[in-house]
Amino acid sequence: MKKILIIHGPNLNLLGQRQTDVYGNMTLDKLNLRLEELAAEAKVLLSIVQSNHEGEIVDIIGKAKDEGINGILINPAAYTHTSVAIRDAILAVNLPVVEVHISNIYAREDFRQKSLISPVCTGQISGFGSESYVLGLKAIVDIVNKV
Ligand code: DQA
Image 1: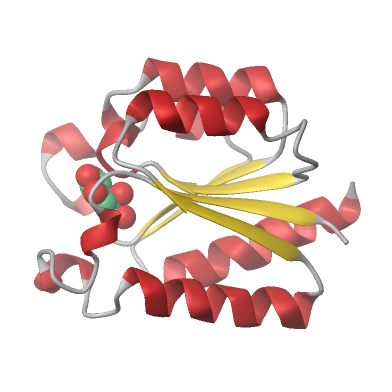
Image 2: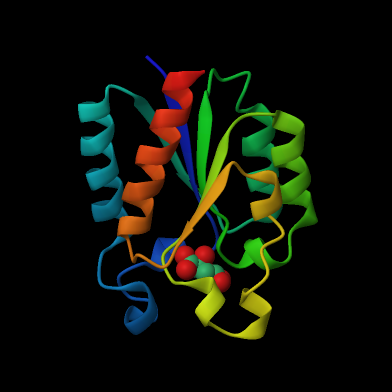
């Protein structure tokens, strides 16, 4: 079975409590449960992590290939706009990566409208609420099944 790594970046542990007007009411646990159900239907395995620490995310991406991961779905959260280190980790690991955002980052503050991550990803999904993850999972499943 193909293995997909899902990385939730900083503050996404607070989903459901955090700026609910922007990020909605769904908690991270509920969202992960939904993704696990979809993965079971699609016959792929998920490894799901959340981290508030840039270096930890870099380490997790760096180890992905050795751990048998075939593709990555990532919401880099605030690191989207700042992290050369996460961008370089994605380039280094050389796996297909889909970037997702709950909010439409292009409709928000200027500093959110630039992603340092998207140029090194296969594609990006932004602005569909927690459904962005569902769409992103479908996208990465299609990609890993073609490889
Ligand atoms: C986010 C958008 C980022 O700008 C923000 O820092 C987040 C969440 C999103 O999913 O919409 O934490 O990645």
